Amino acid sequence: MPKRKPSSPLVKYGRWERTVGGILEFSGAKDFLANQKAKSEAADDKTADIVLFIDNLIEQFPKIERVVVPIQKIVPLMMPGGPLADILPEMPRTVNGLNVTLGRYIKSVNGRVFGSHRIRSKTGAGNKSSVWCPKIEP
Image (cartoon, rainbow, N blue to C red; front, side, top):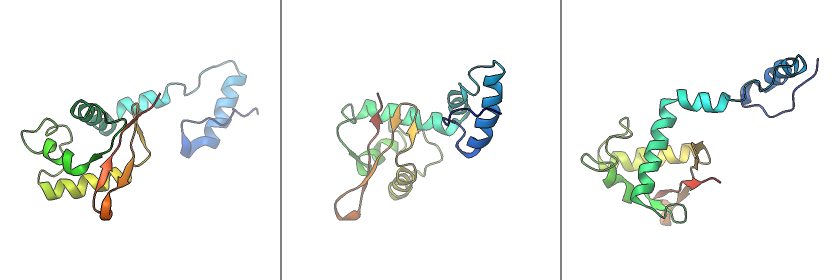
């Protein structure tokens, strides 16, 4: 039973994927789970919403790849009537609610990749404000 090289898109099922993938490759089937990442991203509405949000945020702050954006500058854009108001509908629409919820969310996805963006969270002066730092991956 040949095993596939460890490069699984299914982190939780890596051992299974290596075994089944190895058997399939040995039998001549190529590209087992090759499009798994693209399919899972396409099926994940939340990821699509975050990518859309980041793309719109980059339009508002064109130099975002090189500078950090404090949450306090993002919150007004997410309030009703703002250019980012309708993109993440599950977020609260009060200034205090957005500050807290967006800050927590950014910290919870720190380092995660959404589309071609890697999210970074940093804490500002006095441990008060997180900042949103999408990084465009090459």
